[in-house]
Image (tube, one colour):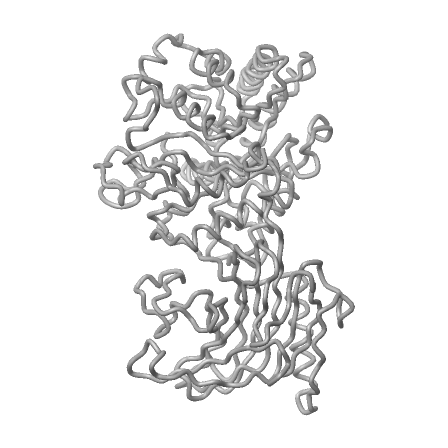
Length: 615
């Protein structure tokens, strides 16, 4: 079974996280703007700069909030502009109240201070999530007001050649709209409003955040008001997280560099990940055959009986060796052999009573085997499906062809998951063991269920996903999030919370350590080639996913993957994946720790290893 991101398959380029903020900040901005509208004829008096929690409003700890009015305009010298044919200007937003009006609502003085030049100095290493809401006026139909905000370097100016907006891959820099973190305002165009966000990893104390606006091309424009929020959080690298932060071993388009060249693929990858210090392994509980290791894979699985069960598979010598390694936790994509011709048969045919019995029986036998065989080790096994929303999509399409409803497909999945969970429950009730076996459901269209984030037109006819049409009707132990639809979003954590709220826990799960937050990240990835080797963008995005998980104490955050099995350029990309791979490194997405030439991708490797430093 080929693995590929549904976002990639749909031909969509990545969304780099420029999005509207919600919640407290949004409400505050709306109230402020309403106040400005009703009191525009009154003279605004300068507000004192308050860098203490007893400011005008006490906000979230570790958060700096400020209102800025009367922002002065400063023209940029032509010699510094990247456009030879036009003069353009910018407005540096100063937070020191010297030449504009500032009200600091909450300062968190142990973390933030206003620098002499007007920027915001961050006093501690950590992750900074910045949101800027701006309002301006003065544009015309011929000179539309376009406003933006970004975290720049020390001089507060946009970087020439920045190319990080979606679709802006031409290195046009400040001449066009390819500015880091920028967004357009209202181009009707006498007033403009925009909210933009950015995530910054502060690697050293003393980083200065400068916020500037850049209207194009600099003749009729004025930014009038700003609402700024900067939230700081510490990195979780000061504790041991070698269980939570881990890597998947699934497939590869190229020869894996194993110590034992004759190891079957799943075994060789597991050995390598254990050597790297990870205590959790995610893999597939299947007789996996990969093209680069085809000879050794086929030889390894040749002794499986013709009609083997999933419990037979778990008892095979390959998995016995994997399960006897030093991993403490295993996350296994596990499908029974109750129906051998289609593991997702229920989405077309529903679940007969016989199907339910067979599904439950195989899950029971597997759970019982794991609890008995590894009793005394205290190991944890999580049994999950793969990207259930993709399965629903296929089911919806087939339902239309067979004159069945989407509700029929949903009920099939509900019955299937209920039978799987029943098998796990049955074994846990019968067997006394220190081994923990849990059943998880994986979703991958969570962001699409969040109100206001995706238009009805974009959703099309497939508007019903696991968080709102399946999980509310089943009891499970855990939920897994294959997070490609939201991993680049500024408020990724909100999508994680959305899935978590939809989980109905079993009584067994309520007594486990995962009861407070039973949702984990089953997949996330930002490929080295897919993202043009932009290490700043990739690093910040990956860090945000990991930290969002650890901030919530979620069970796992699992990087996809050890090697890469996704071709995204050239003949046969996506649909045939590795079948057409000819050895060109750049034809692969680059979601890996190890490249085809055996070199290691240190950006991701080193970041993941940071969470083992205290182990």
